[in-house]
Amino acid sequence: MPVGRLTQPLRGDNNSIMDYKDYYKILGVDRKSSADDIRTAYRKLAMKFHPDKNPGDKKAEDKFKEINEAYQVLSDDQKRARYDQLGSAYTDFRSSGGRPADFRWDDWFQQNGQQRSYAGGDDPLGGAGGFSDFFRTIFGEAMRNSARGQTGQQQQQQGYQQEIQISFQEAYGGTLRHLQSNGRKLQVRIPAGVKTGSKVRVAGAGPDGLDLYLIVNVAEEDKFERDGQSLTTTSTLSVFTLILGGETDVETPTGKVKLNIPAGTQVDQVFRLAGRGMPHVKDPKTKGDLFVKLKVQIPRQLSSKQRELLEEAARIKF
Image (cartoon, rainbow, N blue to C red):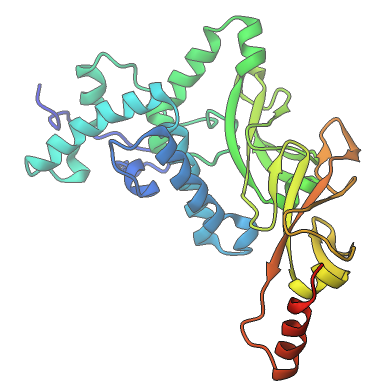
């Protein structure tokens, strides 16, 4: 039976005809994009539309949910393969002149031996992701069945996963996220010191009493380079401060501090500020170190007096 010939189209929770969602277009990537390309595109968009950066902006919030949904599919090999299979059928249907509203979703499920999931009920991640009817119809029941088929140990290790984006400052000081799961509103604490890839377990927040794991993505911070609990930053100072000594301002996660520069400091010298780095997740009171690299600013123009003094100093042998 050709696609598009069933009597009734598939409908979502609000009884409206369900639309196909182009996850590749949502993330702005090509269908042949690598996992790294998809991850990079997701992080860039997630930062742009994050609710914390767009308070009270409903359109940005909806866009953020849409981006998360697309990444949930395209970052998972099995879900991506299933989605691509559906995408090919939908593209062929549209190329033959079919209207989006006439695409028969049930036909695709039957032809491909797929069990149709149902749009009603809880989200696969307990409502944490705000998933659309399209996502829940294609993946909802499949995800539940997959979880039910796992051993108790596997369920404990895997559960349901949802990526979250936090800022560098949130990773430094810890933060809260508000989720809605199984009809309950949850307040989840993200501990200080987390890094990209850290998992925050929310016990029993998924369907069937499974755990929900929030997979943390920490946005890059221009001022700091992170390596575990250690941070590295740069401080710009004049060549005269290197020669004569003095002070320079240094950025730390908690604000600027003064750093004493001894006379005769070399350009490649690195200063260590103990306890000014990232907190340890298991012991937030214990912090790593902050390393300061010096960047020298050479004056582009000199007054006649400055040039005279420097030329005189240059003639003196050390």
